[in-house]
Each structure stands twice: as structure tokens, then as C-alpha cells.
Figure 1 (tube, rainbow, N blue to C red):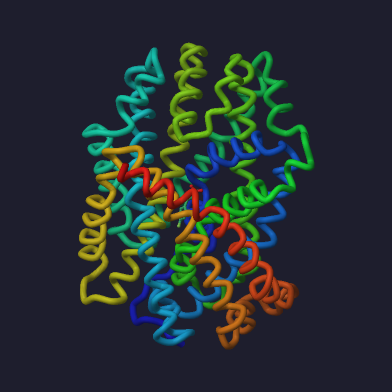
Figure 2 (spheres, rainbow, N blue to C red):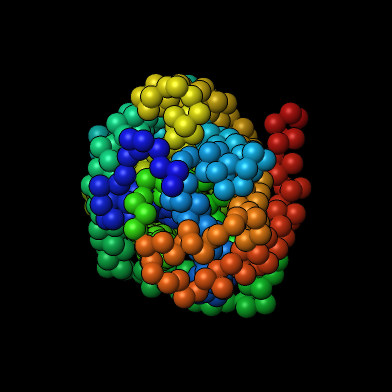
Amino acid sequence: MAVQAGREHWGSRFGFLMAAIGSAVGLGNMWRFSYLAAENGGAAFVFLYILMIFVIGMPVLLAEMAIGRGAARGPIQALGFYGGRWWKSLGAVFVAAGFLIASYYSVIAGWTLRYTLEAIFLGFAEDPVQHFDSIASGWDALTWHLAFMAGSLWIVANGVTAGIERTAIVVMPLLFVVVCALSVYAWTLDGSAAGYVYYLSPRDYTEVFSREVLAEAAGQAFFSLSLGMGAMLTYASYLERNSNLPSQATIIAFSDFGIAFIAGLVVFPLLFALGLSEDVGASTVGALFITLPKAFLELGVAGRVVGTLFFGALVVGALTSLISLLEVVVASTVDLTSWDRRESTIRAGIAAAIFGAPAAMSLGALDAMDQVATNLLLMGGGLALAIFTGWVMRNPEGEVTAGAGRYRWFGLWVNLLKYVVPVVLAFIMIGSVPKTINAVLALFE
Ligand code: PFF
């Protein structure tokens, strides 16, 4: 087997699960999911989303895990190991996507850290719109971006078990407890019921089965599970050969969905109880940083505590996701150069921090980077990986079943990868190309 001498392994199954769930749970869960559900038909969207998790999310997640564990290398070497030289370039696209997403994700993560510390020491700003405008881009945003990046790099530099796993084991259970506690708090507020109705009552079914909504559900399933850029592949490369991949993939996917769902049970009851339902329609990241702080401000002292916990949970989600993005780049740098982990982390991290500077200086640049990364790179990466596993890889069954005994759903899994995932992802990608090109062109106007 292609196991590198001295390559680290996760200390425990729980540690791996916390790290992988940490990668999946992030900014995408705490706001984007609930917003999409509310806008696109409530419970009907939630149902469609779960379907997408089964049909495209879990198959690709399991493919990434099987390849990563089997090759015990970062994405470039792993795809080269199974597919030969040409497939290495897909690994290179993965690493480029990880690098690009890490560079701007850290800017948004910087905002969450700033909001958390402000909530603790200063309270929420009186004018949240003006406050967000003043901190979202410019030198301040750059400083917080650099600070967040430095902290994340420090964890990655400490290694898989001592850095990534240890952090995830401590912070992920905390995040879960906090989000659950906040949902109970939101339930106690007068007027919260209207929030549940808005979030979950099935509305127009015809609307739900449109092309756009399908694309939103599939895209969200993909982004939320950190797929299409080798993050799960890289994490699985530190697994022992005897781990049961299908069962772990199932736990990861359901935990990710669970936290997204519960976050919605915090956000909507809270906003409706405070009469801020009008503001919900603003879909941009701004809504998370403007509308919710408005609610926390109105709740007085309790709001300050709840707001600190909410933004603190966002910091944790963003941190554990950013770590996984950086790990993709670092693992590949370690594989391909003579630098050790520490040197690789410092060099890759400085490069990503610099590359993220435009996103810190301009919201337009941040948006364009996000669209290119998620609409083109992640989708394209997932599509190519599905084709690779379904059609090119020689013995996917052997790789996925090692440690699992028999995999009952193997036939279904391979057929989804061969036929369904490529078609669904191609369909989504084609639909989003014009939007993505416009976001990039807008930068040059
Ligand atoms: N899954 C993360 C979220 O939902 O916020 C985002 C993400 C992290 C995407 C890591 C891709 C990735 F590799």
C-alpha cells in the first residue's frame, strides 16, 4: 500500500469525525441554509435538500474518503496514484480551489471574530448597517483577516493530531451545545411561532421543483459538505485502513444537516419575535452581520449574551472549516516539496493571506472569488471526481469496503457516481456560468 513513512493518523474515530464535521459545519450552515430554506419553499426545500445530500452529497463524500484513505496522500498524489499522471491535474485544481476559498473565507471569518469580541467588550453597534459597512472592507478587514489566518495556520502547523484533531474535539461539541441552547432560548421568546411557520411551512410546491431551486439545493449540499476540492479526501488520508467509511460518511452528512437545521431554529424565531421579518429578504452575507445584530441589540443584556454565543459559534464553525481548507494546500505542499509541515504551512499560509487581501479590500472582489470557487471549481471538481471514481478508478469497491466488511449500497453508489452526479452537477454549472462571469466582469467596470 502507498502509505508514506511516518505519516500521521488521527488519534481516534471521534477525533476524525469532529474534524470532518468541523470542516463541513461553517458559515454555510449558520445562515445560508436557513435563508435558502425560507426563501425557497420551507419544508419542501428541506426535503429536497435531504434528497440532494443522498443523491449527490454522500456519493461524492464517500468517493473522496475512499480515494484519500486508499492513497494516504494529499489530492494531487492521491489522484496520480489511482489515475496516473493526467489525473494529477484534477488534484491540482482541488488544491487551487482550497487555496482560493481559504484566502477569502478568512476575511469573512475575521468579521465573525471581530463581532464576537465587540459583543463581549463593547456591545452591538447602534447602527448595524453603518457598522457593517465600515468594517467589511478596508484596512480593518485586512487586519482581522490576517489575525484569523495566523491563528488557523498555527493550529495547522501543529499537525493533524496535536493541532487539528485536538482543536476540533474541544470546540465542536461546544458549538453543538451552544446552537441547541440558542434554539431553546429562541423558542421561549414571545412571537417566535411566526418564525417557525416562515421557516418550515411548505409553501408553493411548484416553485420548489424549478431548475433554480434544485440548483440551490444541490449547490448548498455540496458546499456545506466541503466537497469538490479534496478537503474530505485529505482528512480521510489520515485514517487507518480499518475504518468504516460508509458509516462515517453518514454520520458526517447528518451532523452537518442537523446543525444547519437547528441554526434555522435559532435565526427565524428570533427575527420574527423581534419584528424583523421584513429584513430577512436581504440574502447577502450582510444580512447575517446586520439583521441579527439588530435583534441582539434590541434584546438588551440577554441579547449581548446570546449574540456573543451566536457569533462565537460562527467563529468556531469558520475556524474548523478554514483549517480544513488550509490542510488541503499544506498536505500537498508536504507531499511535493522537501519542506516539512511547519515550513509548508508558513509558506502556503503567507501566500493565501496575501491572495485574500483583495477580498478584504473590496466586497466585489470577495463576491467574485466566491462565485468562481463555488460555482465553477467546486462543482467542476465534484463532477470530475464522480467521473473518475465511477468510470476510471480500477477497484472502487475494494477501497470503499476495506474496514466496512461488505458495502450493501455499493451498486447504487457507483451508479449515482457514474450517471446521476455528473448530470446534476453539469446542469447546475451550466446554469451558473453567466452569473459567475458577470461577477468577475463587474470588477473591471
Ligand atoms: N463547508 C463549509 C461551510 O459550510 O461553511 C465551507 C467549506 C469548507 C467548503 C471547506 C469547502 C471546504 F473544503
